[in-house]
Image (tube, rainbow, N blue to C red; front, side, top):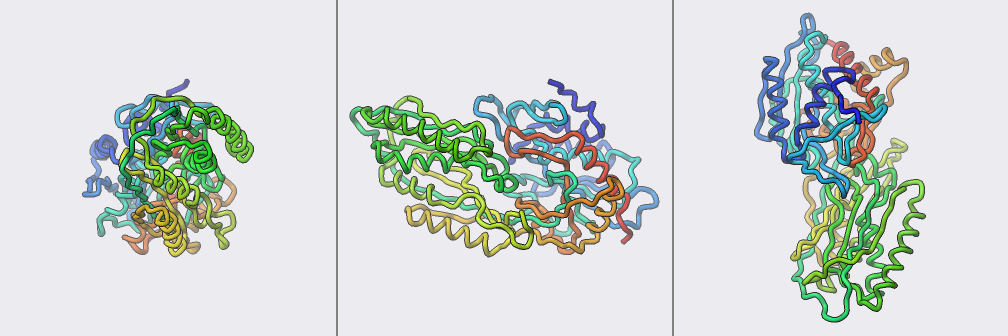
Length: 487
């Protein structure tokens, strides 16, 4: 594998990205990446500070003759999504990402790469370092803990930013300019229970696993109709567990709230006389699911394997209600946009189902560009689980970013892109939560655009960034800064 990222172009961007991938920075553990960014800023003699929300702020004066231009804020987030393949031994809080060049792409060995949003961070640092660039007054905003709740954006101080234009470098398709995004809402669901002793008699313990799914970003990839491991697992339990007399002991499905679940498992106790029939049902179910997701998922694996017998199980009534509620819970695309064909308007991702011996916790991440639809979907999910006796708390609501097609910076960037590459960029809205909506709420009047290089399969171990697109993206960024109009 070619791990020499610093040989890639543009050199300054890849130099910083090669350092960034070596710095552990899962959400909530961003101390070292903050130190790195502050260290770079101080080595360049730039004004910098960290606020109470752990955002990093850096200011760079205009280049000579550009002092009268509108001020630009370059913004990216510091954290990354920690996802790995099940057989990969890796500690995201300690280990460096093993990034390497794979043909026309940079990817990682068995983990997320962190190009989301590490390339954005590296590009801002490159701009700050390069004194040959032409630009007006610059501010750099590196936000904290975006992936798990946009904490940095929510905690951003009022009055800190002075610029007129915000360029968010957190989009994932080169040649596209994003002018709007979805808002979000978390549904946190809890079943409380008192465990009961495992049933006596002739039972065989087994682990039922669903794995091999593609997963991915729950906003960007939700339109691809990929399988959700939690939904597949509970669909089978609903169809076959009662028939076989199987008892549910525990469940552990999914991972992060903004990643489509790739894996899920449940430990069950099956009466020995029924075990073989139950196992055959698993095999038949796997064939059914492979057929249903043909052309979408290519590595689905659903297995039943013997395991150590647990001492306690989930009470039968709680297990039944849980199974039925998960089967009934909305998941995936709920509504497509009428005004922007091809754009998902509203969706939900059943991201997590996990038991700990006293509670079963579930989490759904809802997205919508329409506030009322997002709220109604949250109420619908809460109603499903209320019927099952669970408690639902709806938290972390934030509104989307309404498109401004008449944006002055959009006009400038469209002209710059066409001059560079001979075609106009696509103007889009995205079904994902960009920080622009929150920052724009704190700083009304900011003229905002989001753009970036081509990153495939973010939030999954298949994540990769296209090398050529990084060069185009960065060149476009640099030329945009030179073309920013006067105040």
